[in-house]
Length: 133
Image (cartoon, rainbow, N blue to C red):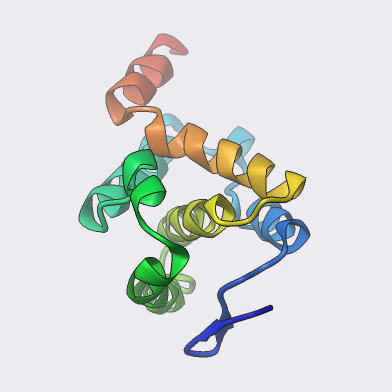
């Protein structure tokens, strides 16, 4: 069953989430350190603004996040033409939420992969990037 928020479907299959995840990520090999940190920091700022964490996802049902998902959809529409890194970060947060509430293998994979960006601290990311130079 699919539920809509605005024009967008909320309950997406794991295969659809995985495909969106694959196509929404920046090409990490092409990013410089500053751009990578911008992507990670945007994810952390969005997660903090919308209080997205493993604990909050466990405490609430998907319907609780409908207003957040609708706002993320609006933000993505605003940023898609202006800043692809920020648009990718927005989709990462959105897919992290959606994938938590699906029980198929692809959704679990998406949730794990988006979680790597969500829960990897920006300080750790910065240290990692700096150690590469």
